[in-house]
Length: 329
Ligand SMILES: Cc1cc2nc3c(=O)[nH]c(=O)nc-3n(C[C@H](O)[C@H](O)[C@H](O)COP(=O)(O)OP(=O)(O)OC[C@H]3O[C@@H](n4cnc5c(N)ncnc54)[C@H](O)[C@@H]3O)c2cc1C
Image 1 (tube, protein in one colour):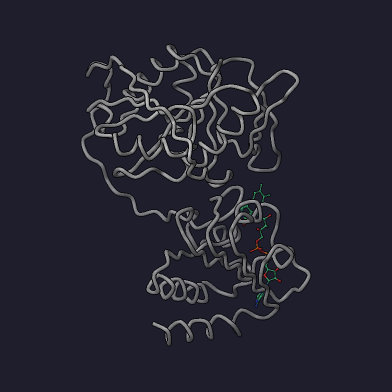
Image 2 (image 1 turned 180 degrees about the vertical axis):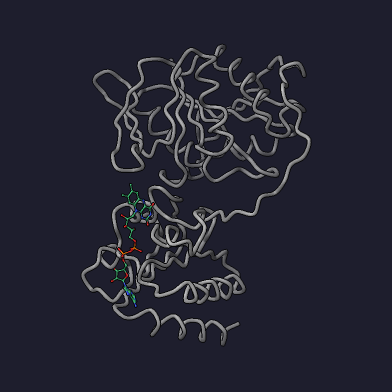
């Protein structure tokens, strides 16, 4: 029987959220294909983490423990995963479209003489020929390609926040320690220094205060920042997002952009202020748990997808919200 493998990613001992999306996707695909499923975990001192992953109910957790896996080094990880794939011969390897995934996927596909399909936003199974069908945006998001691979094991990266998170399961995965032969010789680059880059990780926000072209000036964007800061003070991880025209006008950097060509987000609350709800924006935020829209146009798309809508000028609402939050803090 074949297998769908998921490459787990963790940061400082905690599982990265996209790994749970991969696990959810792998469960569905493996069940539709009638094959097994497993998570592949590389690291150093990973007993606790492997137990945690085992709680998400894939058939197995393959644990690769080695001090060389402590930090991500592309050369080392690719060599190790290549060995695993050559031994296990999985049908597919699902990897997050993260910095790590973007480095690993094409290199792994090349070494396995296979194919990498990157940045997929949905997966399904064609029951006629039992192939995995992948959808990915192309031409800057103007079209969606529907692809199937003619080679295995296929390497697939999944865009963050496009799949639901796996839920904990009462059925625990079997944990299997895999020996891998890795020597220091595979390391071709030496990491001299790691620098923390200050970017906005919108996909980690619990609340997103997002502004669009309806916001009259970049000065008014400061109101949104003030509101986000007050929500942060109240204990929720709030960030400011925006639609693409705001980035095009240079009011916000591109890491704040939500949408097909920006970040896909699914926060607890998405407050859309002066955003009309163009499809390229909606696909990036429609999985938010609660959507609140403030818009002067009662017929706009954003109000159609919103859980709560206020048909009004934002300048009539946001200052009151700020005042209320200040009173509460
Ligand atoms: C290939 C491609 C990729 C794209 N990718 C993205 C993407 O990733 N993300 C993205 O956002 N866009 C993207 N776009 C652009 C997208 O098509 C829309 O043009 C854009 O989302 C519109 O932004 P907006 O809603 O802020 O502006 P508009 O559509 O101009 O809407 C402004 C809204 O503000 C309201 N408004 C005006 N004044 C007020 C007021 N005083 N108070 C309250 N409401 C007010 C109006 O009623 C209107 O609904 C993409 C386009 C293409 C072609």
